[in-house]
Image 1: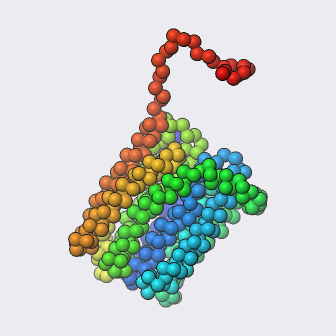
Image 2: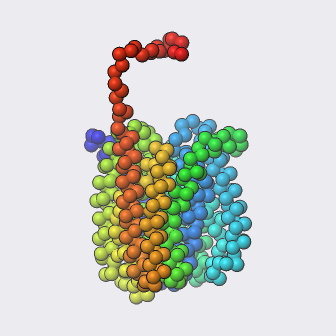
Image 3: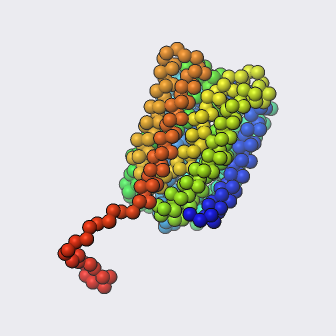
Length: 439
């Protein structure tokens, strides 16, 4: 690959990253203040809610959102969006019904928030749908503005609610309101009334036919995505149930700080990779872009994460206060896993782009075993919470390394030419374009 395409990708990714950096800096800058406005237990309740919403929201649309990447005709885009909306409404109602059944088993501090889980998960699915629409259309500037608005509005609302002493539940309310603000902004930017009418007028028969054609997304992508999001979100829920809500709060803040460089830089690189692949999906070009993105991710995300993990014991107390000392130890434990995760993130959509969801399913299943096996084994053995998190992070490091290797293998295999066939002494019937088909 020549220098110009890589330079273009760096410039485009820089624009997306700049907006994401501004949003995440707002999020990070408010953490020292929020840590004094809300207790670790209140942070833990919010972390458990957010982890639940992230897991359920990832599959609320039955994973039909990524199928927008391969759609070329505008009419098929309308049909796909209608299918996505139907899936979100169905899963939202189902989640509400299941939540009512399980309400009596929930901890007392979470019962008042159960009715917000279906709203939050539906909002998360719609957010992902709008992002996919923006990337499919190549509207990276609007996509980047959304990356600024969503975290910034949540952080600012949480700050305002905390100063108003509205209680720990206000953190959840701020999250839901930020989703509505994002959807209103990006919907106004990328959808016209003609688009809305086109979605409404699309036939239900076409939507069901689309679901039948794209069966791989719900069949393979749902379990794979559940595994991937469970790895990122379920540990906080398990740690909270095993060691208390306060420790879930420590883990939630530590994860937010360690994964900051991933959200700022590695995730925008993945978004740009998707946008470039939609322009030209030839295997050789995608593989060259992937190599360049890996080098960028290593220098701009993996190394800073390792440095942050080593410096955490000297930074946490001045920033957050004495009550958050365990957060520093957890940040050090998560640093190596975060560094390898940063390398895998730019290539995370490779199986989807190549329609190899079954590979993603196998890889994510292996990653779940590597993360949750050590976590549950350490807890069963009676280890201290920090030691359990160290063991979990070691397994996660191996899992993300496997994910990176699998994505590179798929790209490399896609670039290899088909094996040449041996010449035959017998003539082969060939059809010219003006001839009838050869029997």
